[in-house]
Length: 343
Image 1 (cartoon, rainbow, N blue to C red):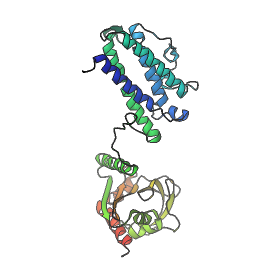
Image 2: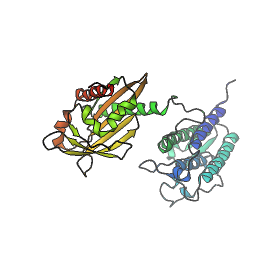
Image 3: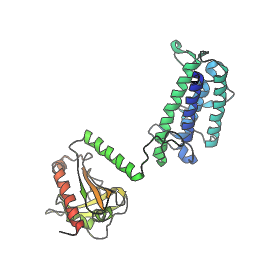
Image 4: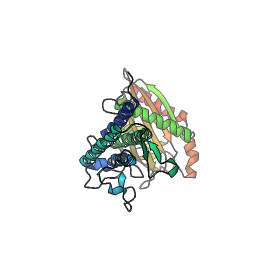
């Protein structure tokens, strides 16, 4: 027999409650409160807000006010005070508060019929008259919306994502797959907005990723494979090991200009990217990226990207435009030759 309408609504409300509360699991007080957006969205504040809103809709609206004080909704309260927790309002305090709200709300739902009338005093007069069914749907939508916010915020904190405990609703893939997936989306997005400012080339090389990566991460080896013929010399001992490293490179040409290359992306044997700068200066606006994906059997798919979407110096743009897919592919081809041991 199909469940009755009230049971269905209660089921979906509880599902979204649980999903929202799950996002606090395992977090420190600091991480639960940390603002993760320009407007200050934080996980503990989201739960406090949703609990407060639910208490109003499934309490006061139907003449069943709670004894819970909500000073953050009082006249004269600080703006947005329901969206963050005070030092006294710990994770445990907020969770317990939400559980008490559930009890009060559920008693309202159990006591009334779905067509029971209510009044929402904070809505416009023409919409204030409501039914329990309408408000249940509204609270489910409210909770689901903020559960979605919480999912994104939690992923930004520690990369944990998913719909509910035991059901991530995401493809079961490892960290390397997700890194490649996100990088591919970034490349496609960049290409749509600046289709002539992001150039890339890809080729599969018959060599393991670690051997190829060593030739890229060691600046002294880079002039050997540079398909643009821009690089003249780099001192030994500058092997890159992480984001924040800086290596110096002497360029070709009569001036023998020097560039300090700031490493902005790094994953050993998988990805490296740097942005050149004048000595002592800020990056000019170009980014060089290498991505390696082992394909098994000692083969590696190599993608080389030149991204100059941040370049604003008009005098450098003609040179930037001269870096083509063919030149990037020439670098990959030279790498393939070097790693094979045949020059």
